[in-house]
Image: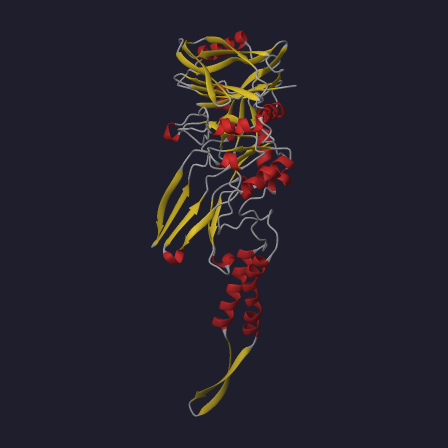
Length: 485
């Protein structure tokens, strides 16, 4: 972004102003540094963000990138493991300390530590059949707001040595270790045998190195591979459904954190051959899982892929309708999800952003905005960015903005005020769609800036309004709810 473009963006933001009492904080949510699978050091990412006018980075470093398979019954002894750099493998304390140091060295960019968590994966097929598939390695949740190292270290996920317990699988893992005992006994005792030397028969004492060494070797290997003999909280050898994901969400809630479903409509699949064995991986899109789980905070609604969950009358509107009617305890907020690792595949750091409305520039303020829905998602087109200058609902003297609930009596007139601006160049054609309870109630088209008012009459039934703006870029607001006092 050029200095002129950045200055114009700041000026526009100052002129149109955010929701009363809040400042706009443009953020990149979900990115990786070289602490896990990213290409750039955290210090360089902060410098890149500052140059682009990005005020906050919400990291989602890989929590545990570890996939294993072992043959029954002694899975620990026979398991093969593939593991990449991750927060749990490298050390939670070191990760949090590194974030603190970088945040102190560049206070102009707020860095919020978070992790991308794979709660559970499972295998189908068998190496004996020369065909195996690992499922759901990309069905992930982002976790923010947990800064206690012990709590973060104990997230209930597949492969965690901390979150596991002890059971019959622990016994099976440790059982081959007892081979050390007979192995040592065989090595300690010399075997006596007779050997003819010419016309003389002599007694020869020999140690059975091969048998004893083999038993000791297998036993020591079993002890090393099975240690600390904890059972996996979610074994990867059968489909456990959404139970691990829901239990992770609930764990994060109890810890006061935030959980976000990541890329619910992305697809990931491929295969490779390991000798004669075909090993495939597959994660199918899972938008309906948003309806099957509860109490999470948000989901990736705008990202660099085709999405349908946010279309009028789709999954998101069903979720919002369930909350409005009292059938769901929490709304599901939509965020802009980046997934930035590096510049490969045409990716850029600031293409997809989440703009938070915050009372101050702090980690706590960002997390409060994320929990309460005070944010909107933006997908930029080159240097152009749509700006939600105003989105409010008014009933008499009462007013509510994105993420809030307007209280109004039955038959009360309601005004929905909308203002959409654009930065980064000349005015652009835009299409602003107002969605009410899953249906389109108003559409405004024309060059930016677009300012409009939609008038409605509240019928007393719980309702919600949200905006979907299309231009060369994209903007998606979070809803405003309307309920009776």
